[in-house]
Image (tube, rainbow, N blue to C red):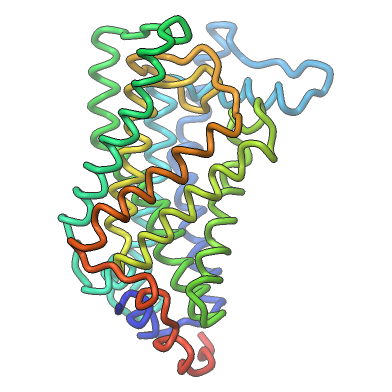
Length: 320
C-alpha cells in the first residue's frame, strides 16, 4: 500500500497545502465570474431575476441557484471544477516537489480497470435501486425528456462530469486525505476528517435546505466515507472516482429530483424526494456489496490497508 507512503515524498508543510488550495480556488472562480454578468443580463431581460422575500435567506439562495439551473449555467459550474482540477494538477509539482501521479495512485499510474469496475458495479446497483421504485410507484415520477436539449446535455455530462467528480476526488480523497494522514499519522482520522469536510461542502445544496441539514448532511458524510474507504483499500482514487462519476451522471441524466440542486434535463424527475431513514440504506448497502464482490479480485485487505506503519515514522514536516 504505497498511496500514503508516496505522499511523504517532496515538501509537505501545511502552509503549502493551504497556499495551493487557495490558488486553485481562486482560479476555479474564473468561469463563474466570466459567466455571471452574461447571466444577470439574460435573466434581467427575461424578467427572471430572483427577488428575496422578507429577508428569507434560504428562499433567496435557492432562487439564486436556480439561475444556474439550465445548460449554460451547468456548463459554467462544471468548467469551474475543470479549472480547479487543472490548477491543482498544474501547480502541485511546483508547490510540493513530487510527482503528480502520487495524488492518483500508489502505483503512480492511472489504473483504468479500477475506474471502470467502480463505475460499472456502482452504476448497475444504483440504477437498479433508482429504477425499481419508479416501476413500483410511477405516479411519483414525471417523464421530462426534452428532445435535442437532452442529448446536448447528455454529451456535456459525458465530457465535463468526469472532471467535476475527478476534481472532488483529487481534492478530498487525494490531496486532503494524504495531507491529513501525514498530519495525524492515522488513515482512520484522515478518513473521518475528509468525510466530514465532504459532507459539509454540500451544506448549500438546495436539497439540504429543503429537507433539513441534520437529515441530509449525514448521507453526504456516509458517501464521503465510502469513497474514502475505497481509496484506502484500493490504494488510490481511481475506484472512488469511477463510483462518484457514475453516481452524478445517473442523477443528472436519468432520474433527477425537483428538490435537487442540478435538475436541468433528466429523463425522469421525481416529484418529491423527502429524506427518510430508508434513504440511508442504499448509501450503506451498495458500497458493502461492491466490497464483497471485488475484495477477492483485487485482494483487498482492510487490516493491511489501514495499517499506519508507513506513517508513524515520518519526520516533522519541513518549512516551505
